[in-house]
Image (cartoon, rainbow, N blue to C red):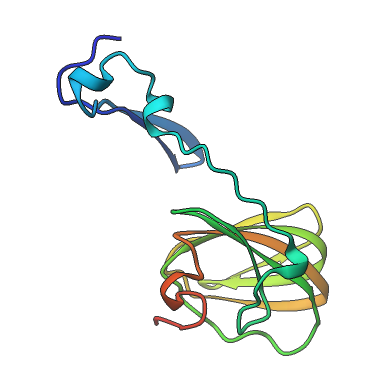
Length: 158
């Protein structure tokens, strides 16, 4: 591909209206040093992080913090017990989750969704939501930006 001087390239996945739309933005860092170099080579981080959840730090809400990158992190909700619904919250990060075991209700912006093993879900940034655990519940979530940075996970910004 012919790339003009001063252009960079990245791909952004935009999941709107239920369809995947790929947008290609061309940029290149420095024509002399990087011209013709693959985008993946320019933007790759080759470090590997392995987290053993047995030794993971826990948040105030009971979550275990797992692997975290610059723009994304994971956490584990392990064997959460049924009880009173959690307090309603609005967070300044997006959350996607996957149910490993148990059942819970996700209440979000007037909607109620029952979450069961094998289900995944999305809570958009800023959406008012709460969870009601129905059966001993284990799930993994990813947040972007990382929830545990700057106290995003503990404070309710609403």
